[in-house]
Image (cartoon, rainbow, N blue to C red; front, side, top):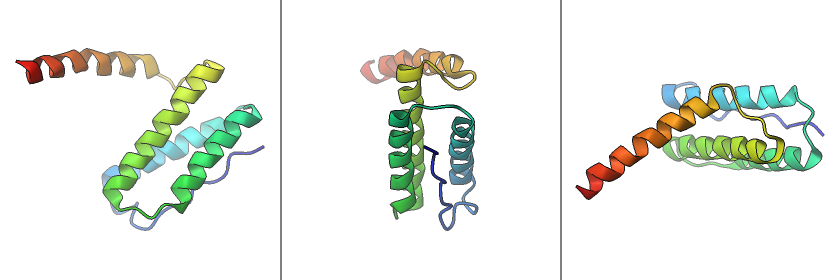
Length: 108
């Protein structure tokens, strides 16, 4: 089973931030197409891509939706297949390192 194509929405190329997130998501899908993924994983990814293709939300919400779907797919791949994108753990470590600082600022 193949991963379906992500359709480009109107206005994505005009919004720089949204376009960057869209292209990053496309890169992820293209890399996954090169791998032999189990049918179960492919179905879940296709479900997320279908949801993105069928949505008609505004640009800000679309940007958040792309981020959430990408994170969901990466977590699924990490959990089920033990594969992650390059530098994933470095980025994750940086996120965790910055989180306690934010909590200390809020409580103080």
